[in-house]
Image (cartoon, rainbow, N blue to C red; front, side, top):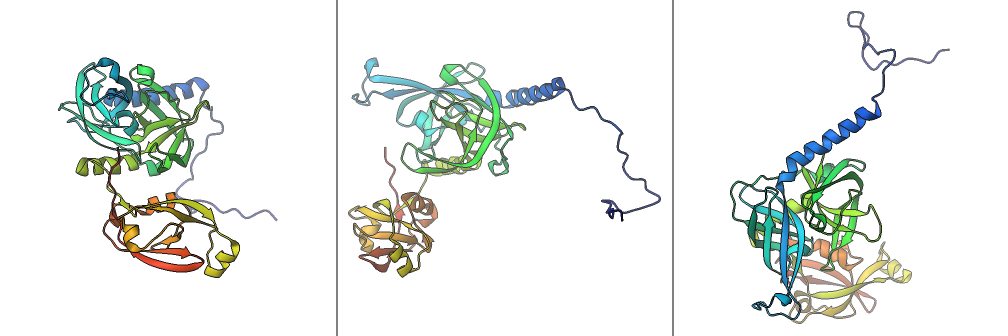
Amino acid sequence: MAPEFHPIFSESTDQPGPVVPESSTPPSDEMLLDAYSLAVTRVVERVGPTVVKLEVEHAGPRAREESQDPRSRRGGSGSGVVFTHDGLILTNSHVVHGARRIGVVTQDGRSLSADLVGDDPDTDLAVVRVSASDLPAASFGDSEALRPGQLVVAIGNPFGFQTSITAGVVSALGRTLRARSGRLMDNIIQTDAALNPGNSGGPLVNSRGEVIGVNTAVILPAQGLCFAIPSNTARWVASGLLRHGRIRRAYLGIGGQHVRLHRRVMRQHGLDREHALMVVHVEAGSPAAGAGMVEGDIVIAFEGAAIASVDDMHRLLSEDRIGVPAKVTILRRGERREFDVVPAESTPKD
């Protein structure tokens, strides 16, 4: 018997089905390259004017802030992207953190002085402001909609070469990177669009001309391993910096290291994760100290969520935890205990 045929469309004697050409000519390599080139050039025409060069002056390590000795100053440069017409610019924290002077050079050649609105070393993002009202501004896309293999374009100022363009694809999503502050950054975008020193803070853009990432790091000496902070994170951080000048986070006041639990301990307390966080330091006067936590305690849960490392705790200590009582579950000398602790607001560190 012949196999049954199941049509996609309902049968009708009055409506003919779609006509499929007997043969079709695939697009030539030249046509494909022209389409690729057109996509990139359109992105550059749209977003390029919003990308600025940042010229940053830092005080030398031994210099006082008020020193006028040019030898005490260290300079650097990076990139940024204008996201409002009245002069708000997004960049990396490591570009502008601790700067005594920030200069901005626009694509049309204007040199402007910028002020730091706020920076967040934990996400390596910062916002600066220039006095202008007519700047072209980029729009943000949804980084959650990205897919591996998608075309992306990086725009920046590597080694001071203003408005340099590189293109590539999204190599992977959901990477993690360690910020210079030591905190783990989640959901990082990996791309093979070439980045170099000076690209930091510049935009990673999709084929529609939307900023879907902020270029932040490369792995040396590897080639093609470049990373960007997702635009959804950037929007959230920029909003917080504009409101408070910093990102508000909760803290307990403990230092810790992850440890492996003995299987006997796991069975005894019904734990399904073999790692936990051992407290190695409790800050005097901190919420943890007030709750009665001590060095040697092993934290296994925070508000019911399993804790296996400092990074797990950091992820949970968000702004909405400030001042809200929480239950911390620990093991102390083999006994399970619970503490009620009220996380406080963390103090920014220089």
